[in-house]
Structures are given as C-alpha cells and as structure tokens.
Image (cartoon, rainbow, N blue to C red; front, side, top):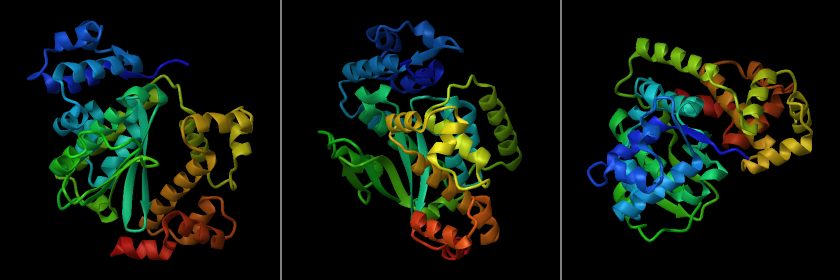
Length: 336
C-alpha cells in the first residue's frame, strides 16, 4: 500500500514554530530528511517522513506534550488558500465546512466530519492508518490548533464542551485543562477523536469575514481541488457517488458498489479499513443535505424527495434518528 503524502511546505511552516527551541537544520538532519525537500515549493513528504520528523522534534525539545504546545502556536491561517478561506468565512459553520471540503489541498493524513445532534455539535477526526505511530500527537496538534484559531477568529463566546481522544490518558494529562480550559470535559480511551461544542456556536460570526474575497477564494479553492490528481479514498468515492445519485432512489451498498465497479464485499472491506461504513456515510450526507435545506426553509416534502424518500413520514423518522429532533423542531431552533 502506498503512503499518504502531504505538501512539504505545510510541514515546514508547522515546524518553524519550534525555531526558538530547535535549529531546523538539526531537526531535519536528525530525522534524515534533507531540508531542501521542504524548501521545494512542489515537494511532498510521506507519512513515514512525518513520523520521523515528529519523533525527532520530541527528542530534541524533550517535551512529551509537544503536540499540545505546537498546536497552541499554530493557526488555520497558515494553511495556504484554505486558511485564507476559513478566515474570511461568514460563520463558524462555513469555516468548518471549508476545512473539511478542501482538506486534500493541505494534507492527506486524515479527514473530518461535522455532526450535529440535539444542542451539541462535534467535529470528528479520522486519521489514516499510516499515522498510527504518532496518532495521539496529531490529534493533540489538531485539537489545540482548532481551539487557538476559534478564540482568535470567532466573534462571541465559543463554548467548547468536550474533547474525546481514542487513547489512554497520557502522563501530561494535567496540561489539557490549561490548554483547553478548566470547564472542558476530557474523555480518554474514547470511541473517536473529536471536539464537541454548543451547536449554537456554528452560527457565530467570523471577525474577518469579507464577502467578495471569500467568494473569490472559494472559486480558487474549488479549481485547485478539481485540478489535483485524483486518488480518492473509498469514503470520498462513496460520498461522491451519493452526491451524484442522491434523490434518484434510496441507495444501498450494492448499488453504490456497482456504480464504482466493485463488489459489495470489496467496498465494505475498504470502508472498514477506513474505520467507517456505507450506512454511516449515507446517513451523514443525507443529514447534512437535510439540515442545509431546512435552514433555507425548503418544505419537508421537497427535502424528502431530494433524499430519495417516496414517503415524507420515512424522512421524518430518519431525521429524528439522526439528530434527536423532528425536522420542524430543528427548523424552529434554527429560527430561534
């Protein structure tokens, strides 16, 4: 299996945060990676390269909690065009959606999902298997960087409620409250890696929102994403097929596997390797589409038809199973 790759300049920008503590030439030399590879605008690093760099950084800084401390110093702005897009987005919801949609432009190490349930929302992080040796480090960096960016770029009070980590509590667990706040609940050995917050925070405004620039950046990011060589994950391919055929009829694993030229068993195995399933992806996409149109005041019958439901009652039941509330209650809460 080929390794995932990440643009080298993104890794270099992250590591430059350590310049006061570590000489970069020494860091990359210690990892056995010529710094010229990181200075090449077209250069890329494999997952094993990043593992070696991370282990070298931990060794040279003698900081076991380096992931948290590095994340505290990082900001979404450093993510090239995606960072600019996020910074100029109108709301937190739009900012998160931009990161999730355009993440292939800055990394192939993982992906995320935004889930909304009741009065809470959470962003779930899925890392590729290649990053398993430094999974906890990556989650700490991502979580701390998310919180650092939110505090600087969001207008109003963002209530972070829970941080879940699929790892045992580390020796430096007492550092988590300092980074994320005393009021946050920390769950170790969890079923997922995620940050959970008040759902209302998704509607908070971003302080740097610039409508015209945001629109232009969206167009540029979409063009860049479309021009990239495509090596889709099974999850991304399934979501694309769902988007293309949503509304034609209720989709199932066998039908989507046929669209992809695979047997159902093969597709099921590939999704399992990515720690997901067809039904999870299908429910996620239908939930996202339904919530989007409920916020636009689209009538429920139309939404049900868009999602492939011939009977709106079936859509009502599915939506309540996804979110814990009925479509009408969801719309009322959004209006309120």
